[in-house]
Image 1 (cartoon, rainbow, N blue to C red):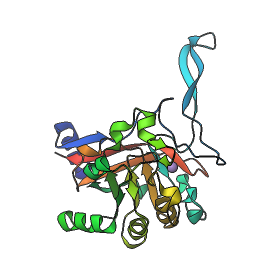
Image 2: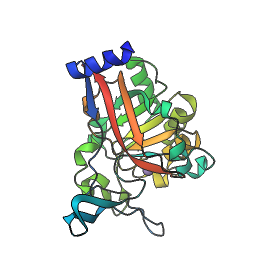
Image 3: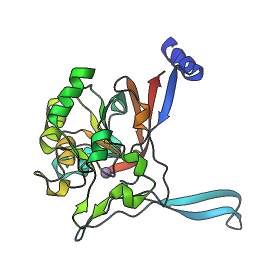
Image 4: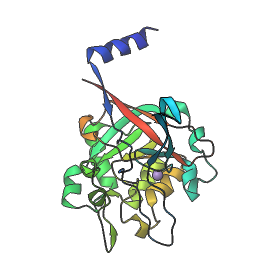
Amino acid sequence: MPLLTDLLDALSGGQVEIVDLTAPLSADTPILQLPPPFANTIPFSLELISRYDADGPAWYWNNIHTGEHTGTHVDAPVHWASGKDKADVSQLPLGNMVAPAVVVDMSARAAENPDFLLSIEDVKEWEAANGSLPAGWLLLRTGWDERSTDAARFLNADETGPHTPGIAPECARWLAEDTPLLGLGVETVGTDAGAAHGFEPAFPCHHYFLGAGKMGLTQLRNLASLPPTGAVLVVSPLPIIGGSGSPARVYALVER
Ligand code: MN
């Protein structure tokens, strides 16, 4: 199988680099905070079973406590009401988990305006410079990963709610329904903008992408290390039967 041998040679020789896009998972990982009356997810935590002690003299292990939507994670279509009859996270086709990714870099505009929303015009402009969107991932770079170790700055909420960048409703509909994308990846706590509870429809990225049977991918980091086109994304959610999502290890293969 020379193709795979060539890939391994390129990896060991440095012609192809593996870029980790995954946030470390710990009790400090920022999580979504919904206002009342909605229920919230628990933070990630480890619960010790034994550590070379009376409960297990030669071994160390933990139970993990986590929500499905914690840290870098995949949203499956069934996560949203619009996708309720579609795939759960265990049913996502493995063939879609190794796919091309393009990076739309809006970090300069998000730095000026934390409520920045990607528009259809922005994507058309990106396509004019870089080519058509692939049957793969659109990764929206906003620079938000720089805030990911500080939950307050990452969630960026005030008395009017969270202020984080995202995608305008009409652009979310167009990307989900009229392009070959498999999914949308972001650096923020969810695929929608912080203010998206007030959009029409509410949470349009969730509504349109998951309703179209596509995926969401959140809390990515290191998108600055990817080229606008040409990266291959590897996404590895756990196959939780009936699950609405899963923490995932996500990395990109990039030619250097
Ligand atoms: Mn989610």
